Length: 243
Image (cartoon, rainbow, N blue to C red; front, side):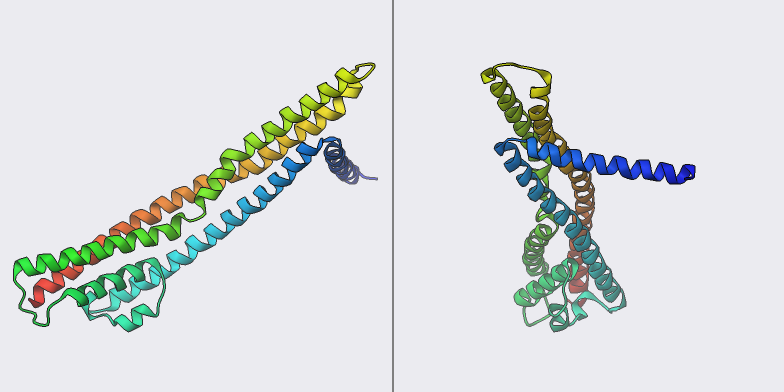
């Protein structure tokens, strides 16, 4: 057997032993520890589903916004866009543009001869509609981040609870036993510490994913607000030209 083959054999053997030790530690956990491990497993599944789902969602929304920006660049003006066509499309930026144009069409008078006070009142309605749309679209970016943040915060405490509970049971069993020894205490402590290790395995990837998603969400919200401001400004400029 070559050195590389021997090293691979040792590595596989070590991994197998670790896996067997984890199953042994799980079997040595008390009922509360096993229940907490089950909760941590659910938290891990939820955390990874939120991280992956939000990454795909943010990428999808960015692609929609880019397509809408290309469409705006090709148009002759914001007020020239087809509302029916916009309503059939999706995306945060598209939604803001649609709401702004609907508000403009709703409050605009039939005549284009608008005085300055009337135009200011009209743009006030448009700005309010755009602000409401921005708030609604922001919820799409921020949804499920609270769940991920709760897992990041709560998982270590769950692990600590399982460890303290397991150690308490281990020492309690020793106090009622006829003889106390390290060999009798070790299995219960090992099972108890498994909850802390599992909690860290859940929380560490979740905290990195949460921070990354939070940063991307903040950037997307800033871009959303800037786009909304740009749409309002362009509508006002075009409205003043035709007044």
